[in-house]
Length: 155
Image 1 (cartoon, rainbow, N blue to C red):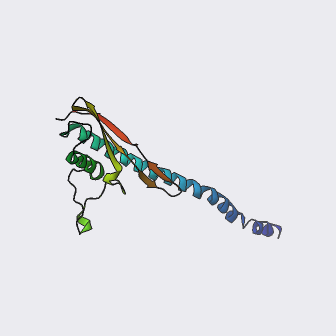
Image 2: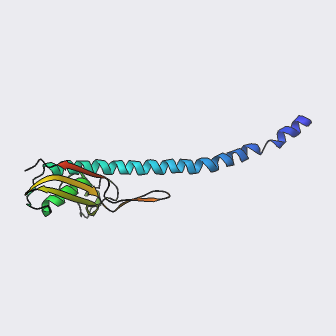
């Protein structure tokens, strides 16, 4: 009789232990997931910015000032957002449109800075401006980072 009473008194322990463990583990796992997603998105931004800066460093630069020509700017921004200089956008059939490499990234989020050496470009810097990653608990806004600078090697 005594053994039977003792086992009945331990029945609720598992539920209490689960509740205590879950209350600590759920926020921890959510935080790890948020950090992982944010890090993944930032890594995608770094890759697209590096690729477009590499493209910008070898593309034809037709301006003689530090303000690039509009065709150059459009091509570099499209390269950063879509991975190609002439993406398909604005099509009524949305499935035919090219999707941005990073969800939510637009050409307005890409800036190009050119350092001149006389009338010839010396360095090309491509950076992300005013881009926000929405995570579970917090939003991260990137302004000026990530960025990539390459020495100009084009014509």
